[in-house]
Image 1: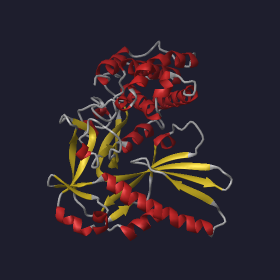
Image 2: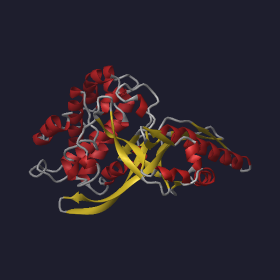
Image 3: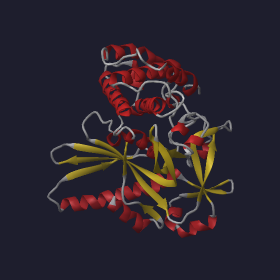
Image 4: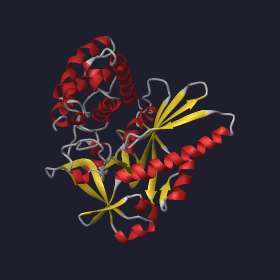
Length: 385
């Protein structure tokens, strides 16, 4: 990170890479189930002094795309302060508006910086007793890096440049009687489209950002620490991740479809609907263990696969205001089905893999005391996209 910051200061005026990367994904959330040799992190950055305005993105039918935006430069005259970024094509005029070109920012700026930083590290390695090889890849918005040690062992790290968009402080309920203020930063991730996507206008494809909910997602799993009910749900999620990993090679139809993020999304719905004070939980008994938490998890998964629909937890979630009241994401009304970007044939076939999953988990879950109001709400409200 230090060398990346040094290279940014040398070659791109105004581009500020912040001191600390932010760990995310399973290793950060207590959900890692295999060897700790893969890590994910955000690299926060901003363009110092540049005023930007978020512009909602629409598809070719003029329908808003939830969670996706473009960034407009408020004062075009400002770009004179950033000649290197301008030469790299980061600022581009479209219909009289200056927008940030995410493809240029990723391909011409961050790839260049990463290569320069790795070159410097390689030179230092030659003069060091510690020998290792570093290889860089790129899967926008991710820059993946593999570090291979002299004994052949390797560690993979996925770095995602994240533009700081805003910050908000929210009172988050930690138990039925108290809330605490938590500050959340919201980031923009470069999501320029580099493959065929028929619903997005060709002229918009190099300007797309995703409004990233990772700060809020981390909080959802931090809330499990010191809370028995939420810890049961987190453990149930780890059980399901281990099972999916085991069955994926068979191959089991559900395991082939389900990603780690799909399973974490179901876990977050369990945390929200089962442990956050609401009308749904007001007269129900608390979760009594991992077996019951796993029962809810499998019930939710059954409904998800039957309806071929898993809504993004942070987009159009009608109950999100219960845990993040007044937040940016609680004001988004449009839902997005995470399965929309999956192979339709795999989505349709996935339900046929669930019986094998239940057989593998026989004796590990129970359905007897599940709250029918919660199940009905999840089926009829949450899954209505």
